[in-house]
Image (tube, rainbow, N blue to C red):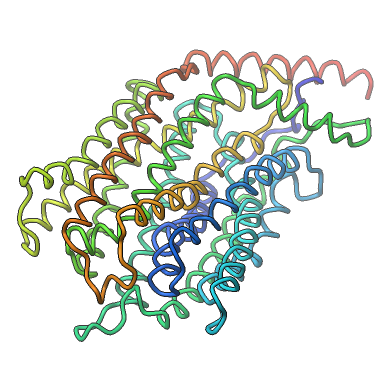
Length: 492
């Protein structure tokens, strides 16, 4: 099959407004992801009363289903034809079901038994994940078409990461300072079930609005976006399956997919246990957790600023390795120092300031690493097209979608198992947590982050698309498109 000749005529410039409306879509995904990572295990374990292993099992089932749904949606959107292009029909369609199921997952029936609550959570998660893919995957897949240059692509994805950080900040502020603010008398907080109703309505409305606005922001670009190849043969399941495997056999795709997945699991463990570590290990209050979250988001902007500059100086692979190893060191350092008695005492302002310093530096480097990994996936699009003759952004970015889901999937699963292993008590705010249990949890967090975050960087060191190779791919694909257009002209 030949390379798609592409749309004719000059495309309108991708201006400031279009870039920002496109990037805004990441905020919707991050509101969902941050809420699930931060609150799902806590809500169903500490508030509803389910065993953490039961919660983790539901997430594991969801991840298993996702492993089939994501590549399928990616392949369909790569080959979908409509008057609104390949991507936008899926993006618009996702807005309502994603929002309503996000609301429902935080409002299970009050008097159902544990089996019924488990079924409710599982069904809501499956529906939420499926329709989340309908928006996030096609939206992310637009990036390689909106920006083809090696450095401009990194800047666009960095801007997308910036809006994702704003989404994370919104969750932290809405949870800790608006809907679940803890009162001086102990009333409220993240373990008060009634507070989740207002939060779920607000967050669901935000998600719906952002999806619609972001999708409309790139609507005028539809006529100039790539068209799927014309197929004269009837649909053949096995032929489509063959195309999927041909695309995913790309060596650089396999490397960056493995690296991103492993990193996402480590990030999922860290995010799922942040509230546990903050409240029960470091003994911080919710106001301090809010300040910490705001500081981390603001430092994320430093990482977003840093990423394209590191790429320009070192390239994507080397730049990711530098920021990644620095981020891992800073992540585990405060817990490791505390285990040796080298951190300030609990309930002191000095401890809080030290934690803020470590967290902000860590976040800057980890965000910069994540941006570069996303940009690597975008560069695989042309590398894969050189081998298969097809642009498969949707299929390739389905891996990226899985990375983000793994943050609230496999990461949450392992976090639940860790809590069970250290015998973390239910209703811990009332019964308390011994320092021994907290220390065991801290040691397991260090081990998990070293294994998963370090494993990501080891895999990433084998990535092979340099600036020179990417530019050579662009030139060769342009030549192939010109030849295809020249061959089609006499026939027309």
